[in-house]
Structure formats: structure tokens, C-alpha cells
Length: 241
Ligand code: SF4
Image (cartoon, rainbow, N blue to C red; front, side):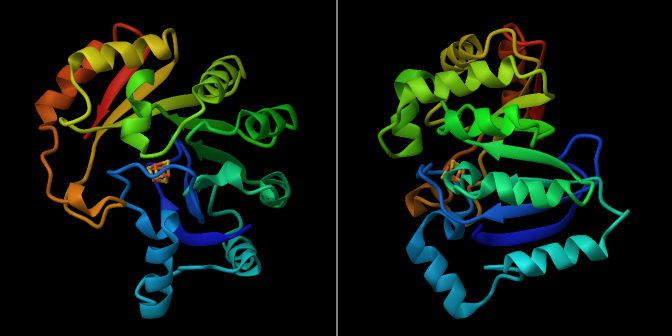
């Protein structure tokens, strides 16, 4: 597993659990608004490695497991996020090692690898799944910046909703990409889902597409209004503010 970073404690990312966050290196999307360019762009990673500005960058697997041993009894689980974790063929073995330490595992994914998701679900390796819903299907490629196999994403949505596991869908929204009609279309794509969280994009940091830095983002009340639209399609839709 290529680990790009570690956040030692989160009270927010794994609902109702104290967790550490492991960031895997590499992603097959190029979402313009992504605020983890070091995990996504090889060039940005090289620069970060050179300047070594980021604590915990390029962590060795053995150091991660040493950290988890030291936190025994203090953490409930680990959030595995990216980048895109399902790109790593050794993800199941990596998760096995985490679970053998008695920890829960939440997986964040962009949904592009339903084959890996199926294996993780069938082998009971994950306890919670979060999948990004980036845009209505017809706008997906414009938002993620690369060609997309929509069939794979649709398979992942269905698999997650029928997995019997706790799950959430989440969407990062930008005024230049998402309007009210888009939220309705995205709601239809996950119609009947348990939870859908909407969040604003952060324009005030380094982004995968630097031309998006400083662009307009939604106001809290606008995001809440979009969540009301989303709530017509799923059991619970909330603005994460
Ligand atoms: S937002 Fe997620 S899926 Fe998109 S480029 Fe960043 S890490 Fe990849």
C-alpha cells in the first residue's frame, strides 16, 4: 500500500467513532476542485517530497501499524481515503491487517472499481462505505476531468445500497457545476438511499486545477436549500457546513 499521509485522529469522518485517517496515494480522477493535489498529481507529490513540508507524507506501512499499536484501545477505527484507495490491488490485505487489530474500517471511494468493492463487501472487510456522487451522469466527465465508465459507477451505487452496511453518499458542490436541477438529477441517481451529504468546495487552498482556486463557492443558506431538494429523493440529505 502506498500511503500518502496520516491524520492521527478524527471525530468527524467516521460517524459515531474515533478514528485515524489513512490517505492512499494516487487517483484515477482529476476533479478540478480536489484539495489533495499531492495525492492525485505525481508532479505535486514530487514537489511535496522535495520540500517535505507535509508531516506524515509518504508514510511507510510499518510506521502506520506501529502507530496503530500505540493507539490500541484509544481508536475505534480507521478511515481509508484517497486519492482512490480501490486502485491499490493490495487493499484487501491491508484492511485485513487493520481489522486483525480489532479496528473498524470505513472506506471512502469514488466508485470506479465495483470489482474491488464487491470483494471487500463479500469478505466483510469494511464496516462503512462513503461514495462520492460528483454530478449528474451527463456532467460527470466535465467535473472529474477524465473519461468515466458510468456503468461501473452505477454498479457501485447499487452494490452499496444493497450491501446491508452503513453507508453514505456525498457530493462536493460548486455554483459553476451544480444547479438546483442537477441536485434533483443526482438525487434520482441514488433515489431511496439512506444518507446523502452535501458540502461546499474550498476555494482557498491548493487545488488539482489551480484555475479553480478563488472561484465562487456556495453560501451556507444556498447549500441548505440544495439539501432540501436532495431530501426529496433520499431518507436523509444534509448540508455539511
Ligand atoms: S476529489 Fe477524490 S476522486 Fe476527485 S481527484 Fe480528488 S481524490 Fe480523486
